[in-house]
Image (cartoon, rainbow, N blue to C red; front, side, top):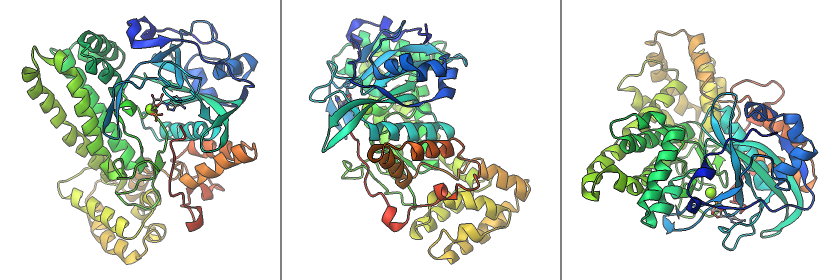
Length: 488
Ligand code: AMP
Ligand code: MG
């Protein structure tokens, strides 16, 4: 087998999915293969980038050992429940256990219509596919749990959106594609046995320790809540805005999934939202913890029949578990924020110091990423770059007085603080304007150079990269991207 498949989801009951092959495309052409990830999965990257591998990535050849299927799921989209969504343009080829011992899904996205396609064409366009490639790999390099990209191919076919666009298929790798919406699919059908089978599968796969607990399903719920609290804090600490935090885009594994209209903010403002379809700002940067909690509440509801004999008996325990989300999120967020300030041994009063900085950043349109990155230099007594992030630098100066006094009480040296701060505050994020420039070059001029270069820069986000300063720079006013699109 060229891909060492070892499938488990395909062993679950037939009502969990629809078995079907990807729909072949006209003229597959390789855009990019992720050689490092391929090796981790036990796949020869040269084979994957060769003619046979490209056919596999395009969906034109079903590789030995694959058991292609489209997964069933439901979901709340912008608060409204849809009882049947499912993989409308994706096919799970199967699972592999990597060199690191971890099991992962390999899924093709944009691989043709399925029984879950509803009105859609089952396809994806080059732009959104390359966008997912860039941002998912950037997130991985930032150390944030995420689905990955194994490769992308152009299809040689046209997809019709507002305009005619070149088509592509993305090979997505995930710890699994099980979502809150997958649980909702069975719960809404009152298929308690389905919920139980899915929970057992997810526990075995993601939270094996829960199986040993006194109350395995309660431990499972608790573990998913903990993973999401940690994940959302990690997003917030790099200025990431997911953009479509629907329950079908909320994984049970705790990985980030579905890079549609997501974006990183430039100037700090908690209300920042980019998605063209998010009119109310439901999924704005600062709302993300609240929305995650809402999604997890929907998840807990699906588990109620497993948690106790009756709903009435199950609810108090579920509420208690949900109540642990906020303190967990707060601890992860504040702990992370204080590390960005160079504070290794936090005290009660530090929260106020951190909040004061955020308020001043907001009032002064300070760039989120560069403020924290340059604050590391300020910890070693070079203030110039961080001051320049503030429209009124004196707003920074008056804050920095208190900050310096506080740092003086830390046991670390200035150089240690600077290094520790640089390790948690990246220089490089996938800024919208750079992503858009790379995608335009690929689509309009068939030039993958800017995409490749950006991907390389983003693979080392915490290192200074001399000569690549422009990739760290916020957009000029005319470069600013105001809205992002799902591209579906
Ligand atoms: P997403 O917005 O990508 O999270 O997708 C939400 C739902 O719409 C999922 O069930 C997708 O499979 C489905 N979907 C999105 N785009 C398409 C498409 N072009 N064709 C068929 N189904 C789609
Ligand atoms: Mg989705």
